[in-house]
Length: 426
Image (cartoon, rainbow, N blue to C red; front, side, top):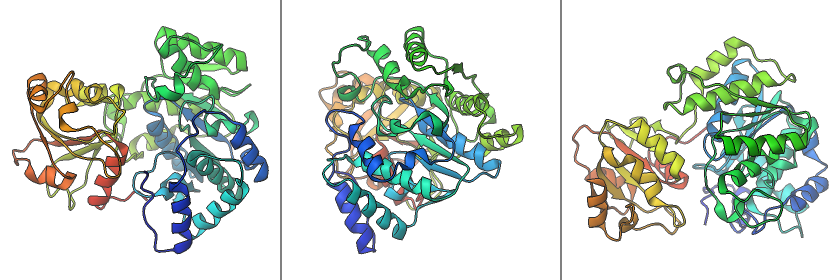
């Protein structure tokens, strides 16, 4: 189930219902369906402004946010497509700087669904096709496109060299194993080398491929793919985190990747001043995001992060090291609770487990390294595990002792939190 939001416009709601009935991705990834859909739609992916294409396990969304901020600081009009959305499906389509309006969204999706008849397209393929149709229709100076899953066989990889300004690879980790580690001949067998191989699959002939510094095994896999594709490889430098609008030391890598992508290409100029402004003004909701005072927070210090894997856990553990925090967490089945919670162990004052609306979730007893019960969680992490029926009740039940609250575990949960606190992304 996916919450697309509700609309008072019946045409919009009809399209949201159609989207909600589709699988997120097809069981076997591939580009055949999206390529045929592009042909049916007149090949809009060949008529885009210069595209910055970003892959990675963690940090690709933040990299896109920095790219957008830097390009807009230069007064360019920028199209952006990222995923998933947090509160409204419209968030996936930022058209020349503004989220798409409902009326246009209904028309666009009707057009794409008509063209997709008989192709058995997935939710993501329909979404990317719609983005490319709109981005080709509305004038702009640049596009920022976030890969959905992997890279090599992701629907966004229908992009061709002529449309691309630069490609980027953010931090890598194990995620979406069903797709990215599926048995296949002729691919690396070691898991992290395979992940790097899949992400590097966005490399195109003559297009700069920029990566953060990677471990040796991943580095070799990326270089092998890039060399085969004829893509020059560049390694980004870390930016001092104190210069950044987005909190967390890890954002220095994402900001550095965005800068290096801009500097590696020659299709669009961005001044040093615009880069500096972008570093200070980038916004990326629900990623180590301090919530504003609102209906949910009611004056408390509340942090929100949609991270749900080991890399996200390491980042949160580093950020809150040396400080106590009340953790409110909800995780969808299939994700590993310990991978997120264990790095935070020394900082946990309490753990409260909440459901993720509309999804099967892990129960409280799952939140431990080998926990079989809530008491085991307490022993493992020195914190008392509890549960609440929703986020509002979880926060209400926490003693007001001046300690911050961290809500984490799922981007779907993060979207609900933003909605409850009246922080709808615009």
